Image (cartoon, rainbow, N blue to C red; front, side, top):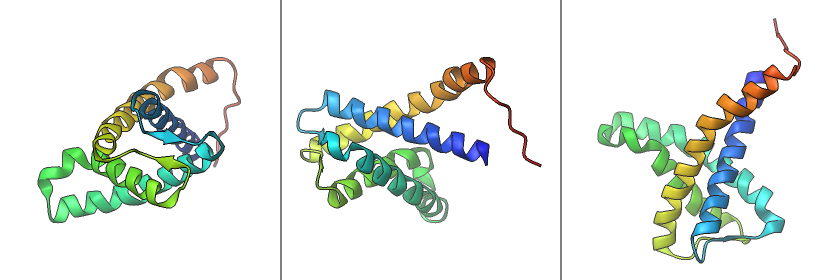
Amino acid sequence: MVRFLLSTAVTLIANAVGLLLAAALLPGFSIDAASFIVVLLVFTGVMVLTGPLVFKLAITSFPQIRGSISLIAVFLGLKATEWLMPGFDMGGLSNWLAATLLVWLGSLIAEILLPIFVFKQLRQNGAPNVTIR
C-alpha cells in the first residue's frame, strides 16, 4: 500500500512538472491556476487509463509502436484533458505536438530523479519504515 501511494505521488509530481514545463515554454499553452490540481488529476487519470489500452493495442495490432506507448498516452491525455477541462488550453496543433514531447520529457526526468533523490533522502532522514504483513 505504501509503495502504491509513493508511486502515485511520483506520478502526480512528475506529471505536474511536465505540465508546468509545457506551460512555461509554449506560448498559447495555459492552465488556470485555480484549476491546475483538477487538470493534473484529470490528465493523470486519462494517462493511467489510456496507457494499458494503448499497450494492449500495440501488442496485438501495431507492434511497431511499442516504444512510443508513453508518447501516445501523453498525446491522448493532453487532448482528452483539453476537451474535459475549461481551464486548460493547448493553443493549437503545433502546441499539442510540442506539449506532448515536453510533458513526456519533463515527466520522464521527474519520474527518474524523484525516487533516486527525494525518496532516498526521506529514507535517510529517518522517515518511518512501514512493513505490511
